[in-house]
Image (cartoon, rainbow, N blue to C red; front, top):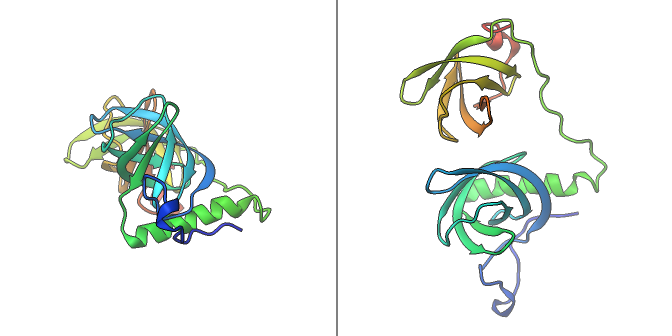
Length: 203
């Protein structure tokens, strides 16, 4: 089975990006933002707790700071180490604790098929009775929105404004962050799994 310990390669075998962790092949969808605040859909094709290989139609500059939200992984950020015709590599900027968490997540993803484990199931979607509400942004401004989709872990809302990826927001009494933009609005991930009681305002 896969694990994510630091490599023991000799200096002669270390790749130019000086990666210190073993990568594993994955297929994870996500959304990333360049330093210019331009956003693009992306796929992660190869990843370790130290670096990530992205497939994306856009190409960043070497050294550019990237913020990404990746399915099953969450938020990662880092600087571009290498750009190729079909992909680019970023070195992840993270604490040791965050890298340990990434290692655990990647071990789960890599071993899931080998162990015969079922696919992750998202929280059941709930049918909100009250769909019109306010989304409060981190700067205190309030915006009328309509709930499209609601679960214990997040919501999708129809809203005219587009808060930046990662911005802290509040939907009713529930705090979360913006993790994706789509044509009608934004997707919000709550800071923690909510109880049904916490959602009674909308149900």
